[in-house]
Length: 355
Ligand code: COA
Image 1: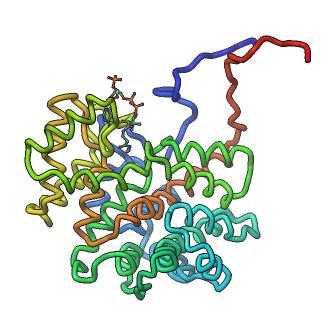
Image 2 (image 1 turned 90 degrees about the vertical axis):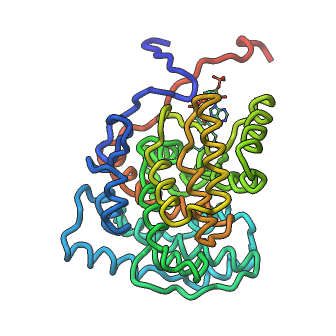
Image 3 (image 1 turned 120 degrees about the vertical axis):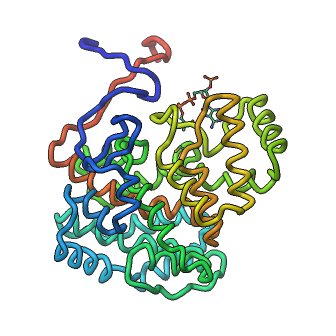
């Protein structure tokens, strides 16, 4: 083959295209359209940041009102969707999200309108899935804001005063340039398939344990760690078996994940004595001392959601309900300057032979 370019496995450090949506490159900070994600989490609402990601600039007052209204009017499920979930009773909420989102009709060519449908319905599909599969009561959706509404359906009502902590986490989960699920979405978009199909591919990719699935596995090990000695033993055991510890390491952040540090400080503020928070810090310290591998956002996200009374089954759906706004922006960016993504492979099978 002519003009062959060999790249490292996993495409690590390979720049495959340009994006104006977000970067992790600038001095270790995650930037959304130029703004530090942590500053946005501090000072802006989920809807304002979602608008910024999707449209490229922060909304004016009127734009924000209109965007919220479009989300609100689509925050409902139709009979057909409810019936399918009742039949499936799928316990894995991410599987359900992937299946149910794929049923959302794509009728016209308006990309953002189709995305609004998916963005508004994902929190409801998540909450209703758990109701259908586990018989958990379907809580009423309350509040004015997107994250507040989601909180009311999945979190402990006694923790209501902390709903903005969920909002902050969701802002930090919203976008992360060419991560695996977004790249899967861009590959799909590059074939000019519809947004619903592209999001289905992204949800299927997000679900894997090396990507979003990590946050669901963190709590089970943290609950067995009471002190520094337990943490050291846990890390040593895992490393000696050459097993990965979920919630640690990152393809891009080799020294520090700014999102992890932000969520850690949020926990220090609202839940300094939470036993799982302490356990997470013990493991973080030992892991860094021993291997120099920093915690990623999933470590503290899992602890935060646990503190807010959000059942573990929702951990990854929360991530998906945020990241879909990033997928929206990437879908539009890909199709607006498209080239089919179709790499080549180095063949390692048998030589040509006669049958
Ligand atoms: N636990 C233990 N060791 C880890 C580790 C972890 N979570 N993450 C990385 N390492 C080690 C690897 O074993 C490897 O060590 P070696 O050089 O001695 O073989 C080294 O760090 C580099 O890891 P590698 O897997 O090549 O890095 P990557 O950039 O390909 O992978 C992840 C990044 C995210 C896939 C990886 O860190 C991981 O699997 N983490 C756990 C899953 C997770 O939390 N994912 C959520 C990401 S936000």
